[in-house]
Amino acid sequence: GQQVMQIPQYQHVQEGEDFTTYCNSSTTLSNIQWYKQRPGGHPVFLIQLVKSGEVKKQKRLTFQFGEAKKNSSLHITATQTTDVGTYFCAGRGTRLTGGGNKLTFGTGTQLKVEL
Amino acid sequence: DAGITQSPRHKVTETGTPVTLRCHQTENHRYMYWYRQDPGHGLRLIHYSYGVKDTDKGEVSDGYSVSRSKTEDFLLTLESATSSQTSVYFCAITPTPRESYNEQFFGPGTRLTVL
Image (tube, rainbow over all chains, first blue to last red):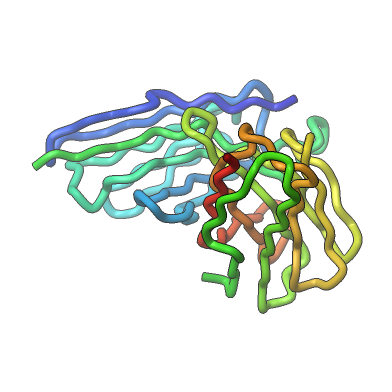
């Protein structure tokens, strides 16, 4: 079945440093989504990427979808303490891979930001 | 958040006892999902539903059953709880399963401990 790997598992940064998490799928995706989960909370949808090579920005967050639609990245510029949490990618398969309305979540990257 | 509630929010039970978790939504969304979240594994799909009495298995369905007799309620049952089912359980909905846009909204979660 479809697998989505995410690295790193943990990242500890000083406030103001940049942060990047990477996501790789074993199969081609029809789209990829990113979620953020604050400590003790539930996952919250951030964004969806659909097109090959797509890049989207939300303030200090930049999301990319690879040309082959099998990988993605989230980059945060100048981290702040409000960025603390776990970031998950989630891929939806294609019709060929039985995508449907199911998502396969990555294992997540836990971000800690120190002052 | 999309009118999703989960009950109970916390439960401690003993090995071998049956447990039922409830997910309730107020907005008549068609697609509902049950996930479990464990450290190092991210979110893993247990079962999902695409309508009343229409359900299907996810990647970790062994030991779990579901029922959906009404649009608003999706029940997850552990027939005979085991310690390996200690986890945080999240319910999610997809509000509008369009062809290429299917973000998920999550409930607050249920923390289940099986002793």
